[in-house]
Amino acid sequence: MKKWKFASFTSVNMSGQRVRRNFVILMLCTAVIFAIAGGFAVLQAKVTTHTTDGNPLTSHVSNQTLVSLLGGNIPYLNESVQTPSKDSLVSRLVLELMMSIDIKDPRTFLGHELPSFALFDTEIYLASEDVTFDSIPIDTPPDAKIEDQIAKAIEKAVQSGELSDDPKRLVGAGPGIKKVFIYHSHFSESFLPEIGSTNPNSASHMSKNITMVGKKLQEDLAKMNIGSIASNKPYPYTTAYAMSKQTVVAAMKQEKELEYFIDIHRDSQRRDHTTKDFNGKPYARFAFVVGKASKNYAENLKLAEYLHKEINRLYPGLSRGVFQKPKTSGTNGEYNQSLSPNSMLVEVGGVDNNFEETYRAIDVLAKVLGERIVDATPAKGTVPSTKEKK
Image: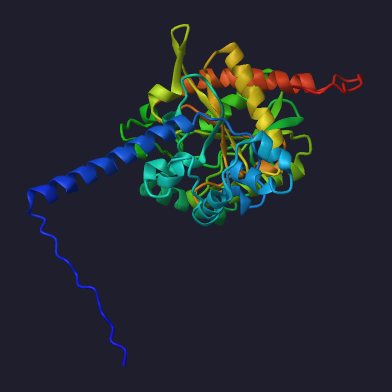
């Protein structure tokens, strides 16, 4: 009968000075590695990516790895792009497919483990000079008290029959023909100065909220003779986009002239990132979010880029940038933008701004958007231009 030999265990005395020194060095080296990885993550966030999503499986594979795989059949790719060896290619492919880790992007090592690194899914497509990884838009849910109030408000509206997606129940402004639909998936987002709070986690309110900013946009568009409809419907945070989508679809069916669909939000970033002064007056800054999972991704991105550039042409830096979000376990990645090529999600200000500052900003957005709509609308008796709008 074969005898098995087992290796004996060796005990380590942690009281020794040398062991304690080595343990401290190990801990310091670990801390340095995390600090360096975090620094690279901030720098890496400034790199612009313009690729669109394909198959969900390949969405976790980096561009270089894909090029390397294709290089076997297209030699030119290997010549034009520096690709890894076959051995390292296999290991990289396994890491990227199985663990969503890109060894050239340190953010992917930490993004799923550290809460603050969950933002690594957001990509900076276009941004003002002062925008870095730590100033990208942040989305935070309302506190439990507000969520409970929202649930009760929805229940009451259902019982009374007022919770209808019929656009006739919504608020219209301007001429008979409605071109713009305004809504708020996260309707309770509010501003600390307006509700008398200093806790950024409690910047929510049932009436003093982002819907008032949408109303201001309506008023500005009406002055330009542009009709719009606004929805102030409450939605539960967890199912907000699914429910607001129903509202948008219903509006599209009954108002055939609607062309632009604007979901207005309030960012959760603090004042130093969301405010800029012009002529001695503070303005709330914009941030445009584009979902990469939208089937109209390219058109939505083009619209956001146009608005960002035009706003900053008039007020340099007022628009923080255009940010892309793919569909992941932590982000929606679509934001109802598949419904129209003229869909947008815009963040107006942050938790520390007030209505006066957001209204100043909205005046600028209304001017830029209104001029685009007017320029694209042919006058009666004229032939529409075939020249493409930039």
